[in-house]
Image 1 (tube, rainbow over the protein chains, first blue to last red):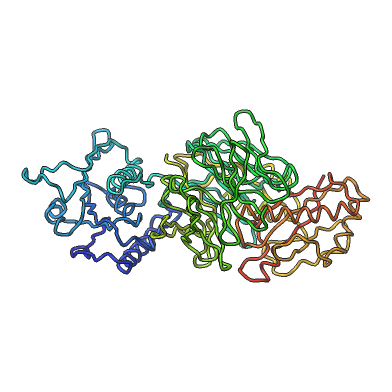
Image 2 (tube, rainbow over the protein chains, first blue to last red):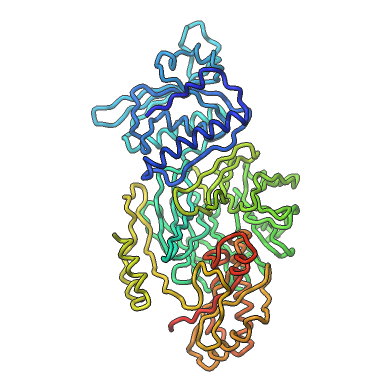
Length: 453
Length: 176
């Protein structure tokens, strides 16, 4: 199945208007997939807003490619979808092979670069995939079409690995043209809630690719599941489960599905967060009577209380250097963000705008915080620059919660409501790119973006 | 098929709760896992007289004991109000005269706010009810507390009524 972009024969005037019609196109395509490929994508990604300064790029069908990726897509289709959904590219293609290979044609179409490739079936049934990314504006034209490509790679991969390879190529192209590491190969953990009439509600902890494909269930339960947290090596997920009518923190190994009930003191056991070196887990316990932050040392089992007192302290998130963590506390009256520094054991307040700030984490290489934020009565997601304290609201529907930052620090995934259902959504740190990721059924919540895998 | 079996288990839960929850195998979804093995067990939740999900009226607490209770709170508050205290005191008196009896307090909030922060607010409500019970002479070891925050709402929707129905502590008698 190869979708032709006949509209793209003429040069696009990139505007929000046109990008909305692209979004509509993708919504139609996504709903087509929901009918035919429900086995492969539990979440449907829809771009709802892209940047005005998107880079025009051509991604042409790879020679000999087939619709044999999960979801019945071709390799180049997945790459086109990745780059288009990043909101930072306007992606064009051409079905006619002569056109596809003609760099002067693409120059006329005013694209910046062309991605082309080919696939050969090897004797053992695997595929040899090669691609190259060509700049349209190359200097050494005197040798005809012999420009040095921006990128050129070759891989051998089984059919089962084709989709992952497509995401990897998207990552390489993104990195080359944008200068930032791509997140197309990352995953998201989330909680899926499916109420059943006259039966117990079903809670699931799932992990899927960041584009919504390839979902896997890690846990099914009739009791709530909360706060999934990835280990820095991507091998484990910690989460809160209410099995047995009590809160416990479990640690589950992804490759095997084996888990242990790691932290289960009386009372609250909540908000697990791995330190960047993977050696410690920040958790919330009520051992001293009120919810406070504790550090649990994974190798020794040693527990260290780092906040004290009557307030509600919760939602710890580590700085990348592991020397401090931010957390939510109502010690000042309403929930605000504070930072605990391990060096001196000092605590300082970081948020001062709005009467409710919670669930903060670091973004943009530690320059900013992203948090759940309320002003004028509406809950939304906001960023705050740590040097200036300047707050920018990224989204504010009144129902936005649980933000989680991408490992390249550029994108935020969060939970919200749309059409009366719990959905996930993404927004870029500058607020310019927005996507929605509704589940095929049930309500999705509490996303946790994986590290680079 | 497994879903049908588990449905049958749930529907006769009043008769054979223990059997359902201990004999159930690990719940394996239909799709084979290529990257990950499937997660662990599901646990049947015994039905709890005294509250139901999606009930849209305030629960009328019985004046007999032992009887599960639902006690309600005002917005952003864990202050005990007089409405319902009489019924709660009846449970406290029962617990005092039956020192082997155990209760579990489940604290909840309405659906506004951050999930883990709301666990803390639900905890505060548990503490208020526990404090009241202890003032009546109930021993702390008879009381177990868990906070669900805004999980497991009793009522859905962004309305004052739904919010009021969710700001609660359930008092549930536990089998020894």
